[in-house]
Picture 1 (cartoon, rainbow, N blue to C red):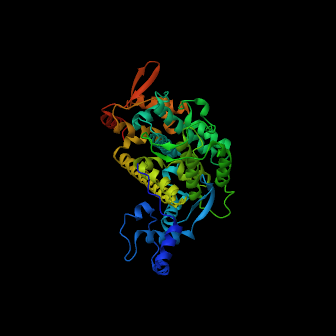
Picture 2: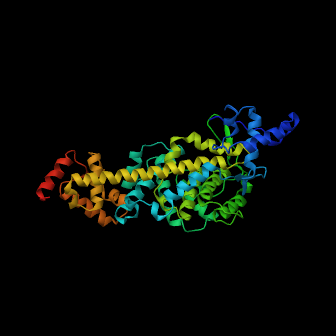
Length: 448
């Protein structure tokens, strides 16, 4: 990926405007101009047609001057000690409002999520989605089908990719338990250990800062360096500062909770305190922060699913921030869009599944004979003839006791809905190809 061009310095641009005698004219144009809707980086502005009568450098100077008053510093600093800063641009304000509506209070939580009978099914689905896509962002190579089969069946990972996914799944489960806790360096280390278990070349690197002699530069396989993180000697102090920010102790002004969560995401990724697993840990901390501040729907929403579809945009939001005076606004704009898409996607998924279930129930009265967990298994089996299930996979899908799962599955097998076979010492149940015929027959026998 190409690194964005670093913008010209504001001081240089103002000196040029003063030298040409255009300073007052440009200030007048700036006052009369409408506030731009888009918060563009120099790398984009230099390629756009300019407003009439000004060149690209003058246009950029006007943009930078108009942004100065709104920018606020935080405790994160770059290698030279210069603070990172952000502004709540119009685009961010609009997206934050929609995030609050779509992921905040009880009124925004869909009924299947508040219903204890169906909540756990959607929770497991979202945990798996985030675990898989977050790992794929970091290079894990496997299919959703294989990954979900591994998690549901409880089998051991076969390779490093599957281990990454299983680790992420365990981490997301743990984040739910930690959401009420304050963030501490020890908690960050705990999350990092969960994320990286059995995936590091040197297992002792889990849950500790990278050492001074360990690689820290972030780049590609062709030698291109995108980011040079702070030296190892600064990491302890920097993490203490990050935790203070995460816990609301800094700065001395109000920061919207979702903005705080996004900045924590950036902060951990920027400091890059670990040998590996920084991206996954950063996204896990984002989830901790969102849940910590009451965004309950983020137990069910996957941002990595959106990020994976456009990884270059994700990387570019970091690079735009670093190349333009540590302006975090670029990252915030990109991430608020990602969050909104993820929230909309989840609401859409709930609506589709609810409609499918209503349609299935309307057409198949036989479903009245089964509990909600069995109905979900039947629906899955109808879509996937030949799919196999175990007591453990059913238990994990609905987070119920083993005996409850065993009773559900054996009942389905006893009624002919599933076929029972033995594989080694394990009992496995299959979705028969003629399931629709079997269900109609069972419906007739039951007099429904």
